[in-house]
Length: 125
Image (cartoon, rainbow, N blue to C red; front, side, top):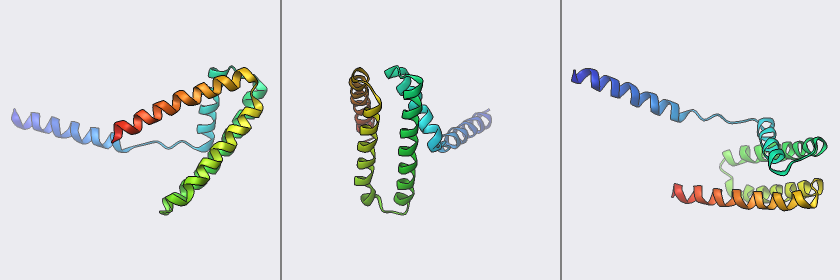
């Protein structure tokens, strides 16, 4: 009986750890589509705005992916400023597509996500 319980516990433990290791990385296109859908719901974008926003977000995702490849080579400090610049440029491009009401909603959306990211980082420490 003890052996059976130990075997079940061992199998469950191995299964849990095996599943925890598999993290699916999304492609830039998938990330851009996901972010566009989120912004479309939050900001009530028109079809024309959605297409423009998706193009902007896809360009950002491709640039960030290329930076991640550089960072994988051990050069993380060099890309930190570049990443901020990419995000700021993306924000400016998005604001040029949005109307005044949507811009206010976008700023509130960003602020709420920034708070969530800070909480997650604090929990990891």
